[in-house]
Amino acid sequence: MSDVLERVEEWSLRGDRVAIATVVATRRSAPLPPGAKMALSESGEVAGAVSGGCVEGAVVKVAEEVLAGGAPRLLHFGIPDSDAWDVGLPCGGEIDVYVERYEP
Image (cartoon, rainbow, N blue to C red; front, side, top):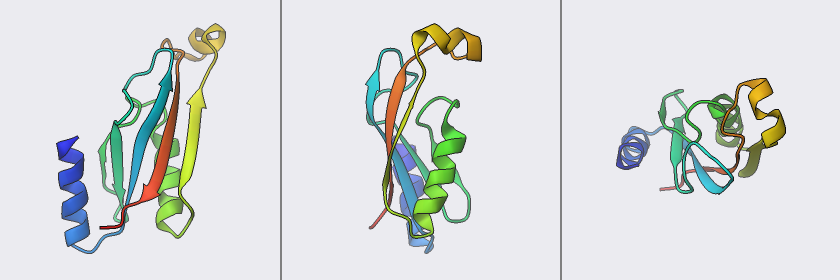
């Protein structure tokens, strides 16, 4: 996580707006624990991860909306265990991710 925070500081110092996404809850199996962070600069740079890859694209899209002036958002991602293998997600867990604009 220190790498993510270092990048946030670097981007902020150069004048970029930054959004931070944080895993705030998990249920069942999840790729990353609560507290995992991903940051996005207005230049399109990304640091960190919130899911190991399966939801990062959706989180980036919401982070871009937040950077454009949108309100912070709480996102929920998950799939029932019974459907997980059918769509190629063997973990079958759920995660909640909070996306907000970073204000130094």
